[in-house]
Length: 199
Image 1 (cartoon, rainbow, N blue to C red):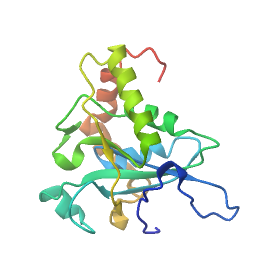
Image 2 (image 1 turned 180 degrees about the horizontal axis):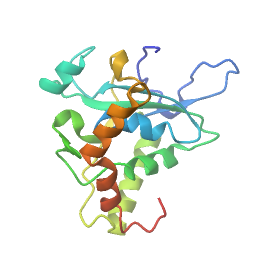
Image 3 (image 1 turned 90 degrees about the vertical axis):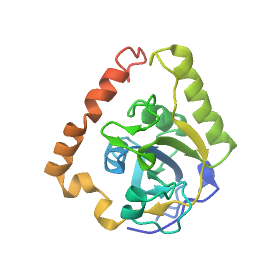
């Protein structure tokens, strides 16, 4: 796993590749980063995902620090994608429809500051897209209560420990049990039950 930081270039990030194709990045926090990573890996156009920590005050934080101390960090996922295949707008829409944006205390069975939901925006364009999505969801009334997911300025993204990367692939049985026991998919289905957008 290449360790790197989320740059402020945002949607215009240049990511090196053999064919020099322009790739872009986005950062989302939606509770357990194992689950967020697994969800985004299913999206056509997503090239890679990295679980990590962002939004806090401690440099190079550990999972133990983020989970048990007041570091301010969120569990988050850095998504690298091909903008010719999937847009940032589509990723933001996908993200919201795979979390519970009405829970300010965390996500599903995971509660606490590190499990809160947030979109970390790198520039004005990303902020405009994210805020427009929130406005659209709220205007639709589909959730029955306002979105509490925050739209925050991006800060340094710290990759998590190796054992967290691709956890759902390395530990499929444990992962499936955790996801089911945590009620993630059942809750998402219930929260978005009245959504008419076909997600």
